[in-house]
Image (cartoon, rainbow, N blue to C red; front, top):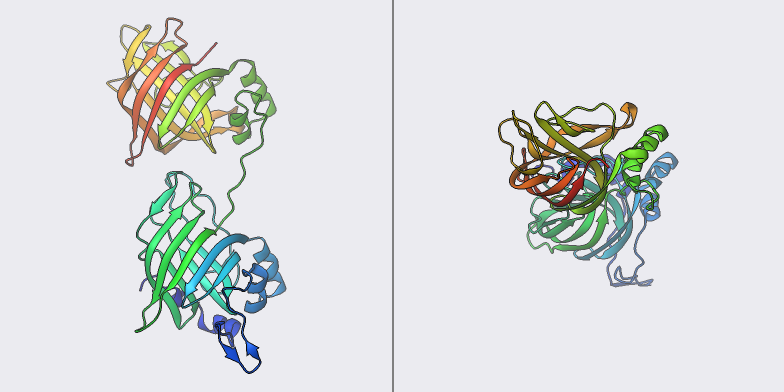
Length: 379
């Protein structure tokens, strides 16, 4: 089977590391009953280091990627795991932990090394598809989960469910894994897993408007001061579907202005083109909302279509970042933007504010975002 764990483990290394280990069973021996794995304490990374005979330098590296787990195993393998480290695909050496995928990036594969019942194991969880920064429930784990112990033991026939949190690197699992051996019993694996640690959002003063935007994009002090002085404006916008959150402030700055599609820092009318741009953060992502309408005879207060038509761009939402090395000018991610499909936006008589109620769809996927509420691009 493609990507089988047995093929990924170097026989000599793992056999040397795991040689002589046996699965703990609740049976009696001459020296008395063995400790049942169901009552044994959950294993930790230290247990794995000792059992797998990691060198001191490897232990140091593994400590940096040792992650808390809450995994229970029953059936052919019995025990519980409190910690595991991210393990190399072909040795027992540690490797880098999973990084939170950006929107539309593929989910990382989890490879977790741990011990249960005096024996070393490697658990692989390979979620399919790409991240949309939302929780994902996978009801069919076939081909997505494997458990291996040494080159001759591989549980690869999986059934059950795998859940991912919105970060794409933590989640839960409840699967049955079966060896491709006649009469073999399945291993039931259930609990919470992690192959990485989500980075905390930068700290900011919640009492300062637009502070989360400044902090997430690491803007320089002078640029923040300029934006605070006149660029941060009150909003009342609700985003839903594949981008969700309430927006109470956004930035329309006063440098490097240009109107039109992918315009930034603009609020007004020039040569028949009206553009209002708002840049902001929701969660750990930054966005630019672009509202635009064009007429040869000029644009005035009124209602306009959210869907692009002719030279009118309608309503467009871009994912991207504010560039701290260029006065916070927004840099769009050209593969991730949503264009208006239905709905409208209005421009108020002051030509600096209005309302919007628009459904937007992504160009490269079936993702959708809805935005509704009132906006303002200047005081």
